[in-house]
Image 1 (cartoon, rainbow, N blue to C red):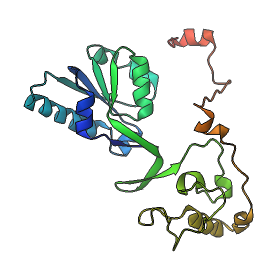
Image 2 (image 1 turned 30 degrees about the horizontal axis):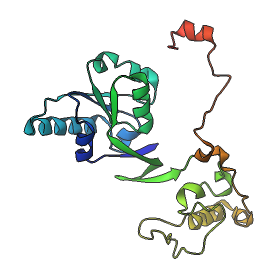
Image 3 (image 1 turned 90 degrees about the horizontal axis):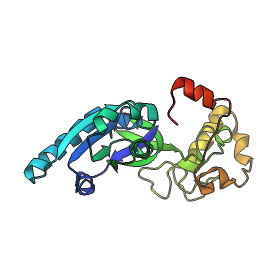
Image 4 (image 1 turned 120 degrees about the vertical axis):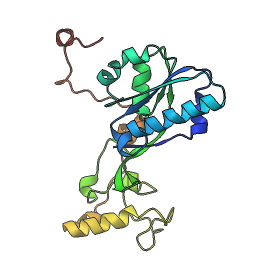
Length: 235
């Protein structure tokens, strides 16, 4: 899931300056799970903006809505009737959702309400940890299911680095376990410790963001022009 956290309210207010009819738009997907942009958070931010507007003489009209997924165009198009009267949308989705919202409604300014952080998972109630860096060349089969790119502070493909102590990372020993210590113990449990001696060659970073924005095309899933017309898919 994508992990995000809310921008400071002061920053949101600053970014909404000059607008009057504002829609606070949430997303029931990843950002709802990480308590950043779901229906509850949308309600809190919308009410905070209303209170601020009244206290400071802003002629704001604040409405709120939460859709299933802002990253999917079909869901975003369904709120056209609500969006059409607005001059700004405060997107409480991740950066993907905010961009899809702007793409579908190019004439209405979309302001991000969240800072998107990483791809991770809940560690426990209220704690989320990064798990995947989306490098496009997965090596989890060699590392006991623990990603060295995302979870090693130095993204070492062969470790440990020698700076870790007592299973903690030297970069931030208070909060960051050493990924390669975890990899060792995972491989030991799996009976695959010989993988620790296998040198993983330098990664071809062209599959990561270093190769530019990535595009995945599944030709067997792409609709033909005739199929798009039949399903009423917008061009």
